[in-house]
Image (cartoon, rainbow over all chains, first blue to last red; front, side, top):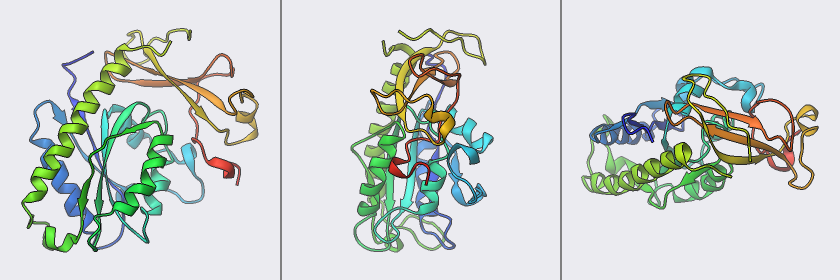
Length: 189
Length: 78
């Protein structure tokens, strides 16, 4: 395994809604990842991708995003809960790629205005990620009552989120390292 | 055992670490379905040196390296 190559863990912000509070959560996770030595990250904002909607799947693959996803060892998906599920645009973007995901780790940050922290959206997202070849971790970050966790400027109001995110990232980084070793060194047959 | 690939980016030998079953997205891909498995098998190869990823249809399914839209369930052609 090439240990000189830093782990890459981009954060995918899965909503394009105006005024989205999930953007504060995504930027917070990016900041937390950046404190970790040997790990790089970037924010992938689905609102900035301008995906066409007159086709689907790999036909609409964006080469730049494909490269970023292919470089990644793991992903954090920050998703709000819309009508008890995750945003349709997030599914549209995720469906555009496959080889970029296989045997890579993924963790989910659920965001909701209500008290449940996006748990219902996360439950819908998990089987999709499994089919894409991703390996889900058993930690989620649930951010319920998001307006009490971040103010409108994105400042953190609930310091407990730091501890919860630390545990989540510990597991995600471990899984990312383990799966990189497997992708690099362990043959299927 | 799948024939090993050489990384097109850095030249290192790649590691075949996954076979992913996907449902075909059109009739051309459907021609490569493995009837026993019910889909097209994509070999996934990773480069230990640079991290590059390549996929190709497995020898049993035939064909050349191509990705896939992925499994779209029963509505693949819908």
